[in-house]
Image (cartoon, rainbow, N blue to C red; front, top):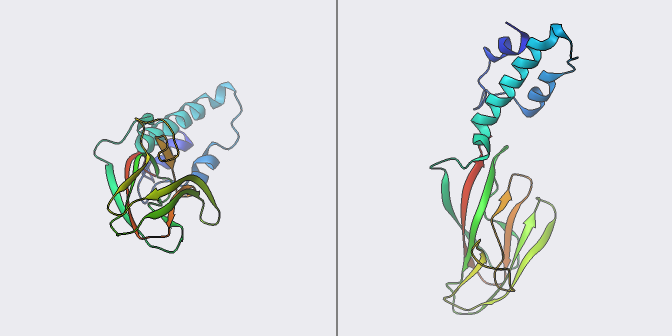
Length: 179
């Protein structure tokens, strides 16, 4: 049994004891294509395929892992993240709705955020008191009041909202990658 399958006996492919991205990358090291290395190459491909199937579900959604995340957005134009995925999680955002339960109109901006820099994605002119504003909806065409979707977020690039009035953000997400 080669070096990769021997290492697999010591670790699970995912979960808290799974290999890190650096360990996976280092496990391949340099393998020259020679007859004596065919076994190593086959084992490496097997382990990489197993890791992809267990963490990324072969590019398909994870059944039962979709949800609607609700976050309170304070007034004061402070960027507030709706959901920051952890680790190597990747979510597909299929819908984003901003609700204004106050009496006055709200001016809100939805942005891409990496934790230090924010880039405006959609500027909502005004959400009347008691109304909602659709921001991301894959069934509509982009206009000044709604965007397009779905989009993907991860721990290093996610969606934040800033508003001059307190809002409630509801974001529909589907888990694409677990680790």
